Length: 215
Image 1 (tube, one colour):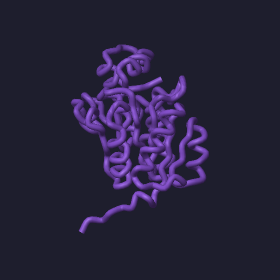
Image 2 (cartoon, one colour; image 1 turned 45 degrees about the vertical axis):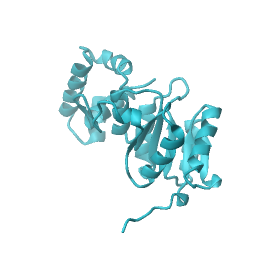
Image 3 (cartoon, one colour; image 1 turned 30 degrees about the horizontal axis):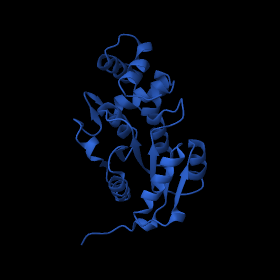
């Protein structure tokens, strides 16, 4: 017998700095049967974090249209580390295999292209997330994409890249990942080869240009 998980038992949170789209996501989230009082929306990451520090939510609908300077990949990774029980579903503006792969490597549970049929994909993604499943909207699923493995860059490579972008040293990265510095140096060399650059200073600009990081 299949076990049905009641969607109404879970809280859903939304992070989107655009009022119109944030309100739209709220309406679509409620189509899953979640009471209005269990859907909470925020315009700023700081407000969301303050709420999550006091409350328990199951699913986050995260727009990748963050304010200038926001880094969606880094935000997903941070949220996943701080709130491992929170399923992060990104509503994104890009159909890019490296970008989507970096989000999943950071801990995202789903990706919905913002021009998909949101009235269908948002409720489906929420239900999948609550059941512990990953979700890709049809447009994203059609990309030549393999979960957590993007054109030779695996999860560890993307984690190292994200930490380099955050300004962490090789020593700090090695300690955080539980590996030797030699391993981190090797990964950094592999990332440079993948990006087609020769110096460490070129890594972050090239990663931004190729969609592995966002500003």
